Structure formats: C-alpha cells, structure tokens
Length: 111
Image (tube, rainbow, N blue to C red):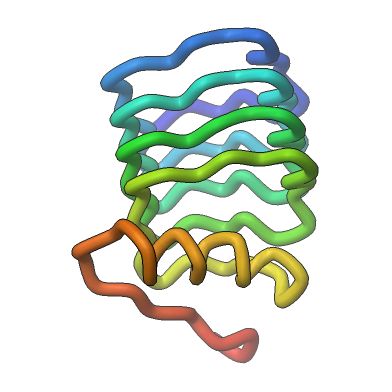
C-alpha cells in the first residue's frame, strides 16, 4: 500500500516484487526490467514504460491508462480486469494469445 507518484525507477531490475494497493501514477519505469512481479489494485496511470520489459508478471485490477509503452517488451505476463487504453490493448492481447495460460478479461470503460 505504498504511494510513490512521480517516482523514478528507471534503469532498474525489479525481481519477485509485489505491489498491492499502490499508487504509482506518473512514475518513470524507463529501461526497467520487471521480472515475476505482481501488481494488484495498483494505479499506474500515466506511467512511462518506454524500452522496459515485463516478464512472467501478473496484473490484477490495475489502471494502466495513458501509459507510455513505446518499445515495451512483454512475455508470459497475465492480466485481469485492468484498465488499458484501446491503443495499447493489442500489446497485452498479443502477449496473452501467444504465451499466457491465465484468464484474460478487459474491464469496460464504464465500470
């Protein structure tokens, strides 16, 4: 349940970490490797994931709206009930159809 809005975690390697009930809005994750991390009920709105990678992670009920995913790499990552902009949904859908064995759902904009 941390709050780290406008924080910088760029050029880092984050392993086996759980973020639950966190507010990480407008955070800088540029050039960061997120490996086997779990994000639950976490607000990542407007965060920058440019040139970062997400491997074997889990996202549940997260807000990823207005995030920057330019040159973002995602592998074996599952998500459920996350809010993701239409322009970025294809990144997560492709990952799911190719790699992820878990349930995949989109939360509608009116929820």
